[in-house]
Length: 314
Image 1 (tube, one colour):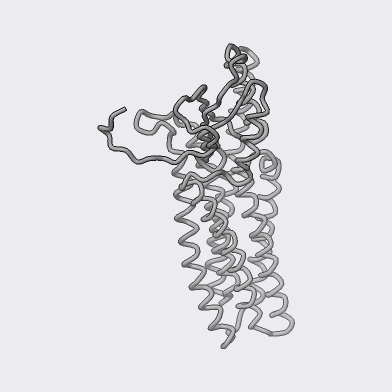
Image 2 (image 1 turned 60 degrees about the vertical axis):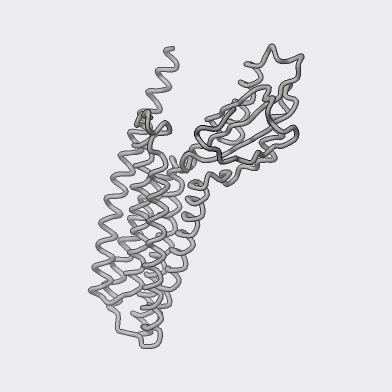
């Protein structure tokens, strides 16, 4: 019991330290967002304003990572037995969708500027871009240790690294303008950053949609899962398998498992072995296993869901 309490304290301490880092990182990144947005407008740099949109994605990703940890601490209720984990997925979906609309507008402005380039204050743009790059590098280094073992933090970390690359693009554009006076490079870099934003937003929309539609998590192969379950001694077959994500980093599985007659006396041991294998190999920690399902169609790994009225007869 003492070891369990100590482990729980270590996890709680790690979460507390991580939440603090995420809040500080989001705060500094928010300042850069405001500085780049205002600086882009003041220095007439579309590339800098476009990068500010990418920085906004960083702020949102960092805040969402903090929110995911915070909301995971809330207890489930009788109305919401899974808690509110899906809120982060829904919000990330809406945020990425809105970024698509913003990016389309930026594309239009960039197209106009390529046809008719406007003067850009290269000096001011360069200073703000360098500061933005420095903050991105600091935040990335600050989160790197946590990103290795936490998929939730890793998503925010990838956003920050992507924005660092975008900041490098703005710096290159400012240097080119400073020494050549080629103002058209500003909208060209802006288009490049837009492509990064669209790619990032597309991935979030794709992953969020898959979760909201209760699809199999990315990186989890259903055939391999079934094969691993069947490889446990005593398991005869597996039916009616469902694998889904509760949120970005929480996977669940339900299945009907037929156990051979001679091993039914050790059913609990078999289920424990299946649970351990699923957790270690596929990051599936929430499992519901039903033994000896007499009503399933034999041989059917997947089972069609039927829509029935509440007053149906059994």
